[in-house]
Image (tube, rainbow, N blue to C red; front, side, top):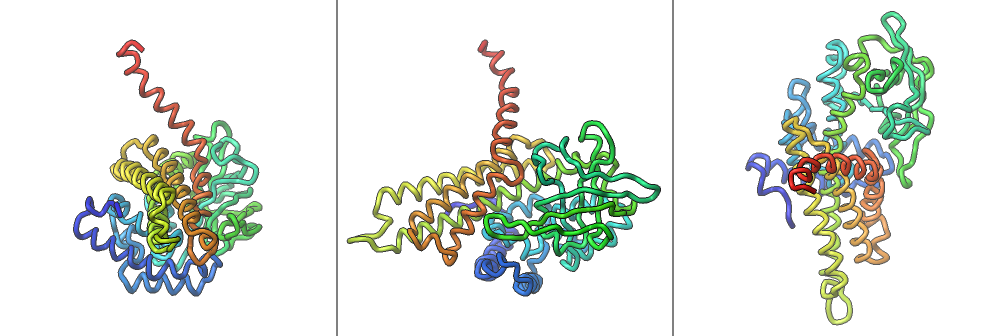
Length: 392
């Protein structure tokens, strides 16, 4: 197996192995229950993560987290992400919200929320996309927040809000002014217990829940719940996306690696005629193609992580990592199912779950087509000076 462990300092290498073992022996066996929304299983896993000293590793020390720097956490994200439930079970799924609150929330709100969010006692969701609105077009957002003295009155609908049914607050992106969205949208921490807030329905993603549509009907939110400056939502969302997309890419690489390992094990063990599936050239081709895709995606994700951790410009690298990881997971999961045969279609193998994540990955955090198009435009512009220099 090829991975990044050779590049990780000894201390992190040992921690990485502990995370990998926890995910393999605690999280993966519980995936069916977690898919079904079993809260007791989720709670037990979180308790075990705390006991193992693996809880909230990338969250701030001052609020009870492990305090890993972004570059350190990125080095662990692949093995943590070998299960889609790994980040939640280990407390790091809250990272993006914690980072936003720690850096941009009013001190009063920050101090009230962060200890509970880091410990897992409180939950915060994030709501940007809306029904009937392309996720890549912020100009079309219709949720509005109107300032009234020391409060904001928020109205609108959002969907694909992870965990909204159990959230205590939702960070809502809303229009707070007219004109271009880049200067007319803000983020507000909306209490889910406030009058006018309701969960409309749970959305299933290829048969599995956990995503929700929410509605706000003139929900009053204190001015201290404004996150960052008025009109600053898209700048904050952009910074959030860079980290979020990088983490997703790393985690998808972890799941793709898991699929390759399952496929290779099946090929070596499944008897066919006088040998095994591993003797068949078509199976060898499928293993090779999947491994090639995974190793390539790992390199893209590692480069994106390096730049994002250093706060350097990384639009091209992040987009390429996102697309490469989604494709790698698709190839690895699909090939693994094919090598398993009919058994690969059953939940017992875990492969349908990986394939479901792979299919969603081509849409999550911006459809692949959006990333391909925007990256191609950047690349074409970047090559123009070279073309001019050589007289092209």
